[in-house]
Length: 435
Ligand code: DLL
Image (cartoon, rainbow, N blue to C red):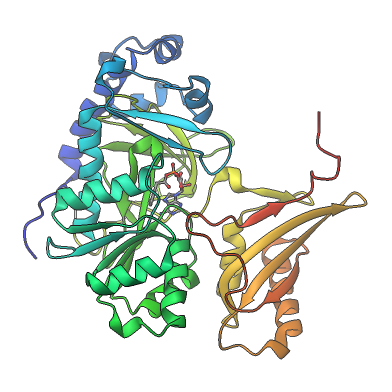
């Protein structure tokens, strides 16, 4: 393996010192914004020098998406507007649009974090990357493209959808790596299978992300596309966009760039830090963002830190795959349920496919949950009733909720080019909405 060009080497001793310097820089940067300044002053912090050690990060106030939305259109800006060279926006997975600003250096760091992902995925400048995520206000297309160009791969900026054009370009340009959401990768893989095109592709790798995936979903597109490997890429608009980390070829979880942001895992109910290895909400503090630095920003993403060194031998810390968001939780008859728990139960049923959709309704004051599940391609439809009953029983046993299950034909549940929506909650559609 050749020497890394972009990947950091982050042994613990040097990392802690760099992180402390980064937190101090971020606090100083944040002091330039009146909202941040007031929030920091309220906890007795007036400059980065007040942070004596990494433990002092816990003295900093939490920030949340509302802090970004309240300052629309350029919230928490910490540089003069003339230094802003770009904005991106995200509707977020829940709620309304937030706009994030970037200085020239921020755009460079964005490119660097993505270039690191390509390097970790084992690409070389000989590779050809087709970008099948959204361009425009969303960060995804810009990020995959910036990073690929910095890395030196040939970049094919197709954007999402347009399956015919995707397939044509994959074949004509002998594309070796696809960047997509997990949903788009699946959609394309099903199209490749339908047309029997697998052997005409040079595709070896898919870098997929932007939404939680199940192992079944990942296996489905890996097999249908005949891939060598698929890599889960994390990211969010607030931390530039895609590319905050990626899984390596051997280990579990996601190597993340601990020189660019600090990760804490907290209990979302008590806001207290959790012991290393426990699943909770990820909170990030950026270490070198200029335009909109993040101070203990609550991502609402559920994951854990993986304290053990990775078998790949790289000195780059890891967090777990993102299993969902604390705000994705549905409360059904008093039970808290995350869509990821449903995916986990389905995983144990080889007769079930990876795609599912949850529908919540209310009649006569009682909540009902209907789970639509695709049958696996090889499973016979005449056993649907038995399979539905067994899945429902297992859900009851594992989640303590009575959920009706309805099997659907493979490929029949709605597909999307971007992020899948797994839950439709119709409970408040019948005049019961408060206020
Ligand atoms: O989704 C950035 C991105 C684009 C990442 C393409 C990867 C690939 P946002 O639209 O701001 O940014 O959404 C961020 O998406 O807080 C997570 O909840 C979720 N998310 C992103 N990547 C993953 C992933 C982009 N690999 C929000 N697994 C985050 C699970 C993910 N969830």
